[in-house]
Image (cartoon, rainbow, N blue to C red):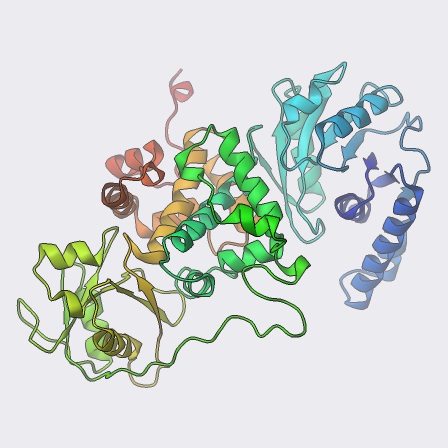
Length: 508
């Protein structure tokens, strides 16, 4: 296939490398001739690096480079061009102008694809004489390494085009997911669950950015915490995406932005690229402050309250903790309550527990060696230090647990992050914006989560997750936490969250 790529920036040159290596002839062009030359040099360096690392042969690299054809004029006639991929700046007028000019010089049979990440594919196509020839083909940076592409049909896209683009993408070694033409498409939309909830936790002073990141990594198993991720992406970019998706979905509470971001963006605290974001960067940066050492009395008696405490009692007993039996705590015991979507304060009031020495523990099994202790405003600091020391205990031969201390909140940190991630994903499935399989594939590949959000919810169990979200909703009164129909129905019917279920069309 002969492919013309218009735009020789980071995305254009990445798409050019990807397509040329896969065996296609690639015309690379830009209104700036120097950008094309720089892009060709960059692709050459990437191919040489691949050869040096034994990822391809020198002959394959040379052949790929031969298939990369620099063009002086983006609007040159191209009778053999079968596909155009536009990768210019994110501006509707600019993209419409590009496709309008191409429509006049390329054959009617050529398919047009836009790499837009935030604009409506339908609106871009509407400027063409034939809007049916255009679809979205959204790659992620760096293109050769990010092996996922969103295929986005517009409202007028001809039905044969998305399957053809999917076949092309997968023949070149990437995975393709078909996504509705909605704000954020799929990957950016699904990614709002983590960062918006992390910002909400920070708004409420539940924990600081470093503390939330530690829990995200060590309890949920994410490779990067949400604040590290925002610093890597750039807070200016993240905040713009959050706002555009929230506005596009008509201010859906589930996607609500934070008041924290506008001032930070205005102040230039964008992350790595500016040297300061949620964390400092550069040669003088020391990174987040280390956690305070565990200093309490690990031998203090502990009473585990509530019906969810059996597993915690068992692991603390195995670690040699002085776990009390009976119906209530002794006068000296610290009280640990595994909370699920509720607060420690509510449990202390309901069960008449001593507020000064009652603390919450997140019952989610951690992916790493970290537990989470929640403290209320009534907590005795000495008792909190002892409770932390007890939770740090591990069975013989094992490393002690790190213990994060956070402010009491409904569900604690990891539960709220996980509930939000799954909630946004089930909302995407509920609206039929993508299939369950494509949602999980796109998120694991595009965002690097340890598992897809729907499969993650299935690990917890739909019924238990519904209980969590109902508790969060009831405790906070915030519509952000209302359960989706997708989750509610599957919990009631005993279906997996990953199961697309039966649709009316299946019964025709």
